Image 1: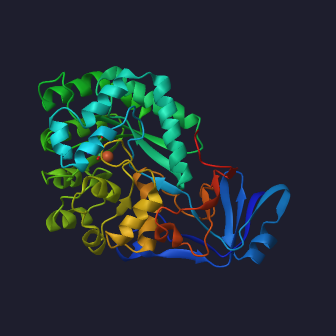
Image 2 (image 1 turned 45 degrees about the horizontal axis):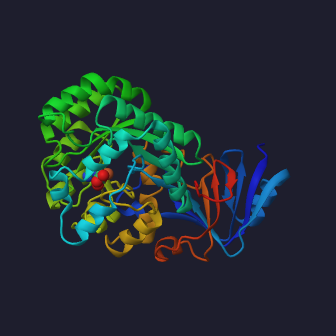
Image 3 (image 1 turned 120 degrees about the vertical axis):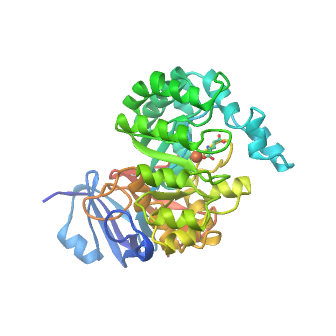
Length: 418
Ligand code: NIG
Ligand code: FE
């Protein structure tokens, strides 16, 4: 029998999304609750979650076992942020100020600012600087309970800079407790060196993708006016599929222009944003296995309409929540804040919001059965919340207070990168 190496004992409760795989429709809000509870961990994996007396009897702590006192507290699975742009240099504080006095995000983009200003700063910096930036951002995320994160490229937009980003993401991940899934976002927008989106997609497919695919696990494209239209997005995604990458798309952020029909036809993993999605689009997505990734911090940051979360859930879609952490449209690394917005603005229950940024976000990253639940055999990624009730995670706006974060069975002292 495996030895218990870490025991979290006498908790008020252990709370996790129920079931296996992604949850949808009515199942989205189903929880597995043990109250009171203890959690036994062996090495990197969860051994048992159950009544304190049962766990102690069946999995007695070994001589070197680390004990965490859970009295008055609750545990939850480590959070999974399935959509971030955490690899960038510079900032957009000036742009934030301009937007506060009326300039729109799309106007700034059209004038060569926005994404392209971060592309300029990111191209100029060294790989070392990028590694340091990603490591710092992962530290911030961990402070807020994120133990697994996706990080996209997409601020290089040429061969050298996109590869510098992907390599920087992978190097930063080796130096952080947070597990990272790198995504190639070569088709974020069209850089100024190219006349048209079509020419740039040709370039990506010929010159960047063959090498980027060695580092990335997934590919993403921004299908929107001013970036890529559906025919170019299709060509890019089909080429990325040839290289075995999981496929994702930024779609329906400002306008509906064919993102959902294309995503469903190609059977890609997720469409992210959906602030502009209407009733028909929501129903089409709900009938498919494409996950709808909702980014309410971005909607708040840009003052966009909110995505149709309740319709998606009612119609049976798989939904996930993420921060969209980036310097321009969502400078927010906190999934608990995103959960609060999901409850207060999108009409999700705390239980639905929890599943959306744990089990369902893990599904988006191809990590079903690995992370996102407190169940035997899962990776021991556990948050000890300093609150008597697990719902404080969403309820206490900006107040996520963890007394411990455990990643792969290791008790971390603090999340801070530096
Ligand atoms: O998801 N919409 C496209 N991309 C990002 C924003 C990136 C940026 O503004 O730097 C997003 O919102
Ligand atoms: Fe994004």
